[in-house]
Image 1: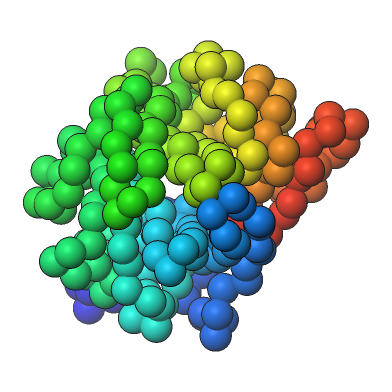
Image 2: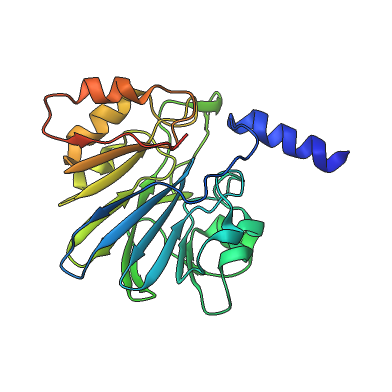
Length: 244
């Protein structure tokens, strides 16, 4: 009964229905100087990149996908320690002893393994260049003065495949540091209210660094069509996939 209650609480808190997974997540493919990159849209804040014979996962979460049916990971990126982003059970299904894990300090405390990158640091993990960038709240607060995601605690990541740069923002708002992002080809921006951005905030964020392709992700009950409308004449290719 306790386990059942915990599951129901998790589902209610994160706005997720009980798992009903497709045979394989939908995906898009992009050409890079190092060969094709395929991006699998697992759901919520969870992504999988297939590139050069390697499998790279972002924030595996068991309520979003069946990780027991997915390929073993060469690299796992964890943006922060919240339960819908750091799910040890799902990580255990895809990560072996040789899997590289890049994460934050608070994630390391919970998971017990991995390489910590602080905001502004970079590394090459499993042969893939990774940069950690800030991800935090300015406006949305858990309680007055206490943001859902405090500055310096979470990461977004810029991952480079050949010469193609992919920005996965993590749980963040449209923070000033986004103006420093350069040459972003593909971006994932969150709109899960009240924890991250409104469509208007996500549009303002995108305008700061002008990605070629933008995917709203981790958007919960927020309507991504609003973001599409806001960026209609921006020159940014906004693509909506099932990433609630």
